[in-house]
Length: 277
Image (cartoon, rainbow, N blue to C red; front, side, top):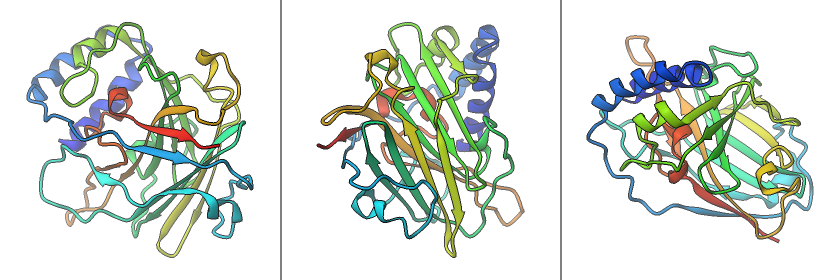
């Protein structure tokens, strides 16, 4: 199921800006497959993010002193609605800091088989190992920004626009029929100043991402983050472990519980980052 959802996700995002009718057809098909949703009823998490006394270098270097003061998400968890046999969930730690100008995130991942089949800007990096951030600064589900960074240094950014009052299902994902009519995936959107760095480690990889405030806060009429500001947010990791037969299985790991393969249409499932003074 997770692999099917990931494939559907790629298709709908590719088509979203160009062919609403095609998405509608895809939605009808997937609605049949996902009619019986498992309720996503867990409480939404909140992360209190400290202000950075030292601005991170964004080099993915282990000795960057800024990260010593960061808040830590100690682990990510398999999608709440995953199916199939239990798997060993690889260790993943996420750290966060903020300044008025930017949000800084670091992902430290255990990974003995790094898989990055794509390396171009704005490619479908989620078809391989990737660290993803979802942000809805306005908190109303009408514009959700998605940023991804891969262990090979590639990045992508996209904006999902919702043009009507969002309609969610039991999974806290947008209803597929609604997606085909009122959701637009803006693959051409680029966040000015977005930057990432990646490094390989003995145990896996580390990725640093800096997310500028200016491009995210337009709907709020602001260009800077402020103390006590709240941002609806989620962080995820996609891992693609190899099966004995050589094929790869999509492993969705998240902080705020989200339906597998559908974080980009799950604004209602986001947690909250609160920026501490």
